[in-house]
Image (cartoon, rainbow, N blue to C red; front, side):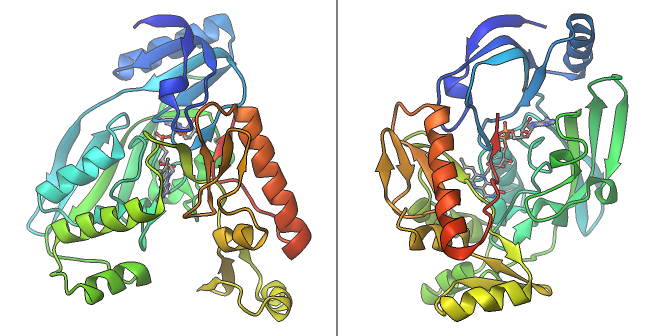
Length: 336
Ligand SMILES: Cc1cc2nc3c(=O)[nH]c(=O)nc-3n(C[C@H](O)[C@H](O)[C@H](O)COP(=O)(O)OP(=O)(O)OC[C@H]3O[C@@H](n4cnc5c(N)ncnc54)[C@H](O)[C@@H]3O)c2cc1C
């Protein structure tokens, strides 16, 4: 296990902000997790678990230890005529996994193509896109308790998945190191095309339905809307879409009849991007950061912004949305 000091994190977060970690360990296997836990217990240091750095905003140098997850491996652990269960190392890049499953003709996560980050972080916010969430294929995960070193198995029920949410963003935040996860995929053709923009793209262009075409069509739609972090620093959607009670919605709708919304069970999900756009933020640039011109939900670093500047921008947006709509935006991205 290699311990590095004063490690630059600029290439390890998709916002591309330049901060340093006091101590840094690249975790290649489960022994490295155990050794890191021993190190932490001895040194009594703060720590942070880092995956692909695509859902965080760093705002300061990190005192203590960063555990950078790099555990690889995709293994078939069960298979029958209809399905296949995979165990995947938490450090595998999510998009590599999706491309692998498409090649192997396995159905279930093709709609989640092009989401950056690692497999281990995917259950943390129950990643979702185009009508699918990881919870739909999730079986279980293994994780190490950082305090005790104990390895625990979490079933789907124990993860308490919600909209961009799980127990690992709440009670167990930063308490467990996820080492691997299990998902179950289908062998039989099972396209999920109920997301309107996706369905329309297939219909409009008469695209034959196949795993490859779902993958490539979603890539096309995503590339039209979202900036590539390699070119413009960002963390995808910065805020969650607010989910509100019907009576609150009706009050807002009276004042803003053109408001964008979706029915979500008995509640109403608003488009955070629309709310931000109505406050005049879309395409705005402040110093070296701003709001992406094609999607108001995405905050961007034009080059040399600091994490503090991006955080300030986010706070100003929140304040404007609160003043105009009386709605509290909640960050999807974790600010550290
Ligand atoms: C361009 C772009 C598009 C995106 N699109 C989507 C989208 O469509 N849908 C969506 O849901 N998200 C999207 N995201 C957000 C992001 O890709 C996901 O949340 C992803 O799962 C984050 O993975 P990561 O490895 O980068 O996590 P990180 O940012 O490194 O970490 C996120 C959190 O998980 C914790 N963590 C990471 N790994 C572990 C581990 N092994 N054990 C315990 N805790 C861990 C970290 O401590 C942190 O709290 C997008 C981001 C970008 C930049």
